[in-house]
Image (cartoon, rainbow, N blue to C red; front, top):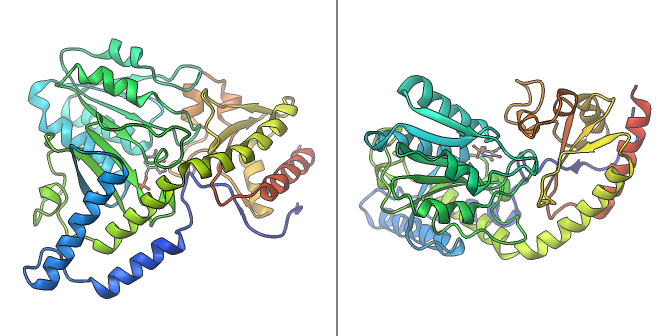
Length: 384
Ligand code: PMP
C-alpha cells in the first residue's frame, strides 16, 4: 500500500537524529588540525589537552553547572552504567538499597538488575502515576536508612513524560548519603522550561539525540562524588574512563549541546505547533486511537495506540510510505512484544502492545505532519 511515495519523513528523533552540518564541520576540522593525543607530553599533545579541558568548562557553562566535572565516554548507555554501578559499588559500605523506576531505559534497568542479582543490592522500582510521572513524594516514601542511590530519567524516551527533577533533587539534598543520578539525554534542549540540574550528582547526556554524533556522550559528575571505574587502563578522564581522549568528539558534542540549548525556546514553539495539529487529529478519532500522553504534555514525543489495528503493522505500512516512526523504543523493539513503559502506566495489553511513538524535531515541518495524518488515515482505513 503506497500513498506517500515522495520524500523521507523522519519522525523517530528520540531514537537518533541526523548529525548537523556544524557538528560535522567541527569534527572534521579537529581531526585534521588537533589530532595529537591529549595525554602526550609534547607541545601538540598539550594543545589537545588544553582544548579538551576547555570543552569541558564550556559544556558545564552551557548547562549552568558549577560544582561538576565532565567524563567523556561513548554515550548514554555507558554513562548510565558508570553512574549506577560505579556509585553503588563505590559506596556499598554505606547501604545496600537503591531506587529507580520501572520505565527507565534498558541501560538503567539492566544495570540495576545486575546490581540486584550479582551484588546483592535491594532495588525498589517506582511506578509512574497515570500522568506518567514519578513524584518526589513517592521517592521520599521509598527512602530507607540503607538507601545510597536514586536513578530517574528526566524525560521518558517512549512517552515523553517530564519528571519533577528539581523537586526531587531538593528533596534528596536533605539525604547526603543518597546519590541522585539523572538520565537527561531526552531532555537537553527539548523543554519549555529548562531543568536546573545543579543539585543532581550524576547527569547523563548523549550526542546523537541532539544532532551530535552516535557513540559519544558524557557523564557529568559532582566533583565530590567518587565512582568505581568500570574499565581499567591509562587513567584518562580522572581515572573513570580510561582510553585515549577523543577531542574531535568532545568538541562535536559541545557544538551540538550549544546549538540545541541556545535555540531551545524557538524550537519548542515550532515543535508545539506541529504536535498540536497531530493531537487534534488523534483526538478527533478516538474510535481509532488512544493517546498515551502524560501530563504535562511533551510535544517532542507523542505516543498513542491503535485500537483494533496492530500497531506494528501500522508502523511497517508507514515505513513503506517513507514515514519513519517507532512502535516502542528502538533499543528493545526487536526483542519485546509490547511497551513496558506504556504497561507501567497501568494500560491494558491491547493498548501497550500496539503503541506508536512519533518523536518530533525542530527540523520537521507542518507539511510533513499533514502528509503523516493523511497517510495514517488511509493506512488505518485499509488495514483490517
Ligand atoms: N537513555 C535514554 C533515555 C535513551 O533514550 C537512550 C537512547 N535510546 C539511551 C539512554 C541510550 O543512549 P545511547 O545510544 O547514547 O547509548
